Length: 137
Image (cartoon, rainbow, N blue to C red):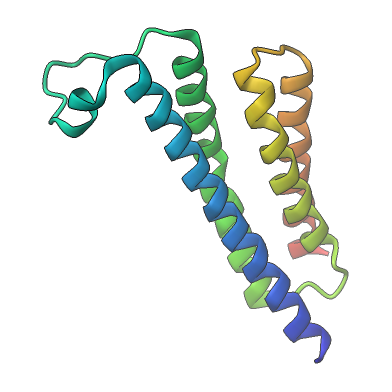
């Protein structure tokens, strides 16, 4: 297996795991909202505009929204790295940093832990910056 092929496999693995994390966010948010508002709300059209009021359901929703704010940048950078190649491997490391930080971010947000959660978010941004740097290096 040549290096380009190994890099492509790693990039696809990162992409797949990021989709798994997206599905975890969606499932967690839905599960906590349904627990609070009931399965009839979940199965219905939600026309009445009810939203969960509990802290945990709200945190899950905000964590999911936060993930989706940086997710397009991650996917775009990942695609750019796959097109251009990443001879240094720096972009692959950056993608891994982003994903691991985003995984740690979820329980920190759900637990309501300030500062450390913000630091982990900054680490995820560092991962995106590493990916960008690899494209220009």
